[in-house]
Length: 270
Length: 205
Image (cartoon, rainbow over all chains, first blue to last red; front, side):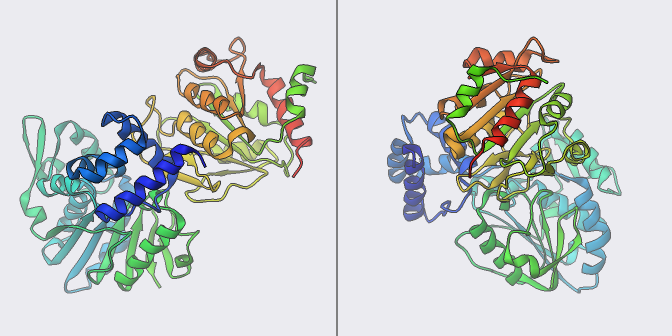
């Protein structure tokens, strides 16, 4: 084992013991790249020095957390996923008097607002509670504000249209300077909350869970834990949506879900 | 038939390689078809290939290459264990890494050199996982991606091979790599193909 690998393991152990954030079962290669970036950006000589400083400095830990999590997201990312939710999943969910949806690993909220728009257009938003969870409080704050860069709206509009959007996308936000402020009424029923797939347990029964591009950062063991939480949280025949290159093939849970749409990675609890 | 020079054979003779990573950009489809030509179905090493393409969700590379090759060709899947006799292609729009337990992992970090997947990221993680048992090959392209990756492979004790820039359809990528770190060999495509066949023949489990 290289010195750097030893340092990384010790850092993750230190973070777990000191802050109760468990990154020990995240995949190593990507984590290593991001810690090395953090070492440079936070002006440390080594991972060991970073560890020592982080143990004594809570603010520095919050800064490091921005490297350990990956806040790259986009509204209606993979439009065909949202189109499939609209045509295959929401018609089933419509039959319930009230709905609970969990967006696990919501990051800065782009996916949550996309879902809220979709639910409004299908007449379901009023009777839905959305739980949007993440481990990064800085990301959650951004998500709560619902303000995204105006420069992204061209891409998001294109995505929205490809996802079968029924209105003008600009109906949903107000442009001010370089920002797009999303309609506050979209988040009346959204609860943003701190929740970790590696250390926390199930908090509610849900009908749909969307967890996109989160499991790829987990090793098989942690993927299994997360899928276990989803299976437990989902109601009978509840739906699970994953990222476009994510797979449940390597987990024992693959026998406890059936594919609704294999290409879109939308599954249903058996 | 191209034959390998004695110096090349000597370098290969005392080594056991466990995996091959190949990166290319512009002109890379033809170059890769050339170097993989004639590799047998039960080739004893895995080959992990990354070709920069226009960012689209579905890559048709695996299908295209399967049509021309005896090797099993597939797109690499997150947390899949790497198997010999298989040519893996990096999926579009995600970075591809190799973990210490020799499984693939995908990630959505920002593009590097305007590229996602990035050759540097794949090669650096592969160098970390395979060390001196890795062969890195960098071919034609109009992008500096791969240069740092090839350097990482060399520094980890692996074998770094760059396509002869004079032959490359676009010479920017091989030249950038050679400039950053002198590779073990600079070869034309025919010789790289012969070297891969030889590596397979002399591989002992």
